[in-house]
Length: 197
Ligand SMILES: [Zn+2]
Image (cartoon, rainbow, N blue to C red):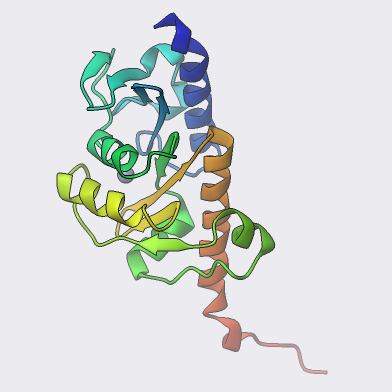
């Protein structure tokens, strides 16, 4: 397992970062990375701000546990389904960022044509159908939607982003969060009040 230590350290670092950036809660969200025939994934119910390389679970691409100190992430079936649907994906980040969750609750359409970085990095955001967290139905729904875009909003839940590297994938999440905030504010465009001369 020592050969995967560097990647496990990176995953735990990015999970701590996700929490510190307030892009997920103390116990919420998960990150996985596919390396050849192995999937490394964050555990369930462990403080995200205190995650270490030794806490990261090792799975086969079918989801069988090779090594795990803790209970594995509840959303592991979703990660496996996504890797099966997209052979180009090497990193998956699932989180509950505030503005994306607002969009996920209100069914707010998120515009990707308002900033250059969104057009360049994301292009399209898909909305999934609602299924309860951790279920096979949710895993199948997200795996279907992820075929058409790297960013999927999960109704009444959060977001999932995919990419080839951790930095590229978290960038998509950060951009989506900014876009969700902008899209929310856009609703109040005609309610601007100006000071009289
Ligand atoms: Zn979640």
